[in-house]
Each structure stands twice: as C-alpha cells, then as structure tokens.
Image 1: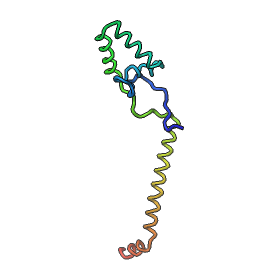
Image 2 (image 1 turned 90 degrees about the vertical axis):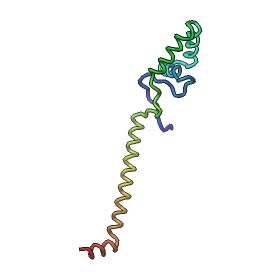
Image 3 (image 1 turned 180 degrees about the vertical axis):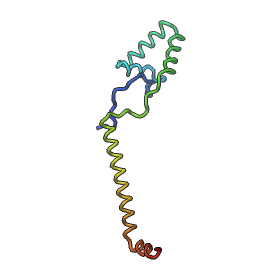
Amino acid sequence: MRRFERVQKKGLYRSRKGILLGVCKGLADYFDFSVYWVRTILIICLILSGFWPIMGLYFLAALIMKPEPAIPVMSEAEQGRGAMERLRRRYENMERRLRRMEGAVTTREFDWNRRLNT
C-alpha cells in the first residue's frame, strides 16, 4: 500500500515532470488526455500558425499556471492516520518524561535533599 494516495487535484497546474516547463503534461493531466496528443496538437499549431504566436502563448501559460504541489495531497483517511500517529508519539513522549520525573522524585537522594533543605 502506498504511503500517500493521490486525490483529485483541483485546478490546472504545470507538471514538475514535464519536458519544457511542464505545460503540456499539466494540460494533459487536467483534461485527462494523453500527453502525446497534447504535444502533437501543439506542434501542429506551431507549424500552421508560425513560431511566435504559439510559443508566446506557451510561455504565457507557463507564467500563469502554478507549479504542481511538491508534496502529494493526502486523502482524509491518510490525514486521520497521520494525526493518530502524531498523537501516539506525543503520548509516548509524555509517558517517557513522566517516568523519568517519577524516577527522580522517588530516589533516596531526592528525599535526603528535601529533608536537609527544609
């Protein structure tokens, strides 16, 4: 079982694993197309309309689109398990500290120091 489950992304993002700024892969992921067809359509438009208009739009889209989040989005179940794990570690840490304090308070040295200082 994978540690993080990907949930449906909301929004249009540039892919971090794309070839040139990740615009085509981001569009393909958003519209659920094959990245091959998005790149093919881009190249056809590039050839038919000329170099500058399409490349200008491509770089404009790269500037406007946010990059894909680096940390995968967790599902609600994963978030709940993560919260339970943090709570368990916190409880264990508090338990360890309490045992250490209890051990210090119940020693004979602590009893003698308390009797001599009062």
